[in-house]
Structures are given as C-alpha cells and as structure tokens.
Image 1 (cartoon, one colour):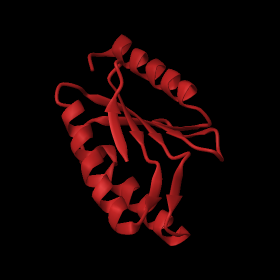
Image 2 (cartoon, rainbow, N blue to C red; image 1 turned 90 degrees about the horizontal axis):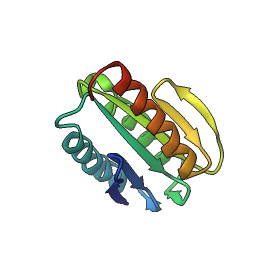
Image 3 (cartoon, rainbow, N blue to C red; image 1 turned 30 degrees about the horizontal axis):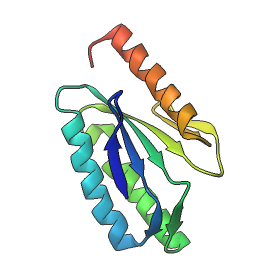
Length: 125
C-alpha cells in the first residue's frame, strides 16, 4: 500500500498487492492516521482508493475487511465527511452520496474535485 497526497489535497491510496486479514487491519490504522492528519483544518476529506491491482487473500478476507472498513470509516466516527472515489475493474456507479466507484483515476479525481468545489461554494472546508 502506498499513500500520497495529491496537489489538490486529495488522499490517493494505491492498494496494490496481496492483502491478508492482518495486513488489511494494519493498513486501516495507517489510512485512518493519514485521514486525520489531512483533516486537521477541514470539515471534509477526499480520497481515491485504487483497488485495481489488489489481490485479496480470499473472498472471506475481502468481505470481512469491507465490513470493518465501512464501520471504521463512517463519518460519525470522525466528525467530518469523507468523500471516497474507489477505482476498480468491475463497477462504475454512485454507491452513496459520499462514495462513487470508477474504472479510472482521472474520472475519480474529477468527481472529488466537483464535490470539493460544491462544498467550498456552500461553506469553508
């Protein structure tokens, strides 16, 4: 896993590689720390989660980690909204108001930029 902050203050998480249950839990701790650091002076955090090259240890690991991450990264646990653009190889759709799935990174970043701009127009981040 590699985490970078893009110049537009979007957190980019490249989740390439084999993910075991243990590694996934450790990664969530690192991701949470990065989100909290980026959000110090903001009411919203935007992130791209790229899973195009992720290999799950098995389907059970994927299902368990997905359930844990949805609870862990719920906005009520943070006090601010997290907009997530998930880049993958299988789906392209709006899952929730704050989560959209894309086939490519460019579309994901554009969606997040629009979300950020909409928020800036209505309030201060």
